[in-house]
Image 1 (cartoon, rainbow, N blue to C red):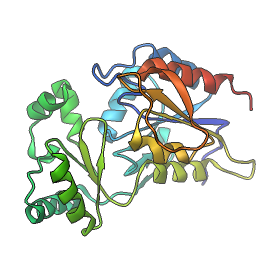
Image 2: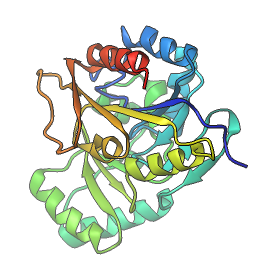
Image 3: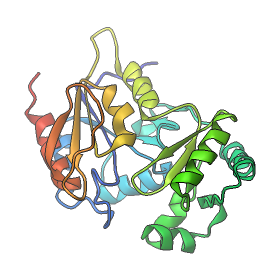
Image 4: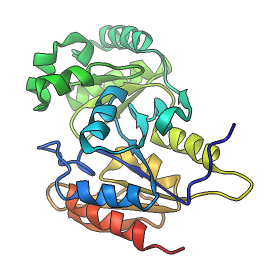
Length: 259
């Protein structure tokens, strides 16, 4: 059974986009998110965060949203409207990281090797939030890779059918999926005989490029130092303001678009 089509759907990155990179708070973007959902825009969180982290954020903000978690490993519609897993199992990823690290002679410490206290120290998260970050289904976050080590590890992981991707803060090991994979699946489910929804996405950096390329209206907020990433995404709209400040303007653009 297909989900009823939404007039507008917005996919949004979280860290450095909807929420501040350092405080992990949405600030002024909280009211803008509420405006979107109140006006019937279907919002999907789309980030490297786990399902547990995204659900906790949605609950804290009092919002009913969809989830694309762990860089496209899992997509979940709001209210039990359907879900699909694209990624390999966490155990498989962990075993592959260990084997690839041995092969490449690389030190690779992941969240699975760390306690919530250690994750909190590395990330600046509160202990309860760090525990949620450790509840992974399909990907592993590595916290201590050098560029040279990442190159060797990435090559060894590729031979095992996995990818190493740089995030805003750390490295992620994942299967053959990305944010765009899950966005495509969501949009296909939202498309019916009455047409396709109007699609928007907002991000802040290179790991959002696949998501941004899959929508009609891609938007990019500024980074912490006021820069915009060079992503090579056609039709990309640059939102003036870092993180939540730029996100507020992206939300206004969605609401103002009468297309």
